[in-house]
Image: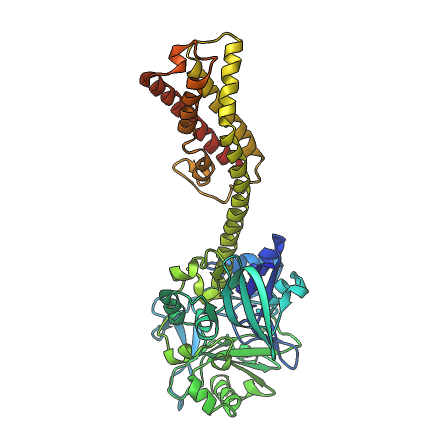
Length: 533
């Protein structure tokens, strides 16, 4: 049985798998597509130039997780060309005009406004080998036998101690058992295509259905050409087409930083909606070339090849609800609380970029979600390990409770043999409990407890109440047993004050035992905090 099954081979799933492998867990990743990467899709032009048909940019200033991963993997980056100008085509019957971009308004500035470098793309960077290089670098570090392509998840069943996944591989139905499953998938796809037994709560299902998949209904076009002729004309490649007949809403330079034998490229976001794209599917490459020619001249499209990716036709990305949404009118709010929590008592988790509270929808969000689930799985594994260890402690303590009266009797006999008779019951009970507490602290030190990941609130470690639980009521029980023993003991019959202790004496004993218990509880807490330090 797997420790963790990860469903979804996008950036989130790959990053999480990387963490699971580093922790030496038994894991496997299942991806419905015949490739890894999810919405990260880099293809090669006929000349070998990498072309991103999915995510292209990351922003080091605001996306530290991606920037850190790129640096850790040693991947080369390219600054997005941005001199602050945008070529604006707002009338198909007129030539485009150059305008400065105003980042405060998100629109072209009035004529004569000086341009600010990086105003349009805000310091965005690309990967030299395309975003696919990020996927490839992560994939190379994972055990190939644990990566299962063309496995589409159909059902998840909770058996109380583990979950069972049913995955479709061609005509075959594959069943996989795991202690925990992480669904690193767009929430809407989960709601639309996965059967859960028992059924998920209605409010959680509603959250899944209501969470839009970022860029699910979008399409992207890339024109690969031998040379970046727009650069030779003094343009950066940044252009907006806002007229009603526009095919590309926005274009940008997708070429290497320096001229390369593999050629150059312009990329753009298709302005047509999914229905229009299906209607013009055959002619769409020609329409893309026509618009680029209007922007940068007919020479810019010579010997060009158009690559298109319509994500609305990608069933592993776009759900019916995403098509029904149409234009969202802005970036959705992601990271709903229901998607942050564990379900089925820690056996079911949701991940993916749309579950992230920061960077949701972007590559950053995918990594943020992976980091969150990694922490939560660590905490869950620590909780399991702690509970197993504490169950051993409970068994040990159960035996100590049964033998507690023997500790008291030993203390009484030792006192009598040394002719100590002052406050004999009081001292014997206190000695019995203190010896038990000392042994318990020794036993506690031997336990392989994972305490570092657990919180300390107002000075108390989270495990302290659990460790103290098997001791509750013991002192009172032992006191009652000691009083009964005293009444039947021939050795104590010569000591009336001990043979039948009065209420005041018992009250004094209770006070001393309470003080010993308080001291023991503080030592347990300090010991647990010391383990966590």
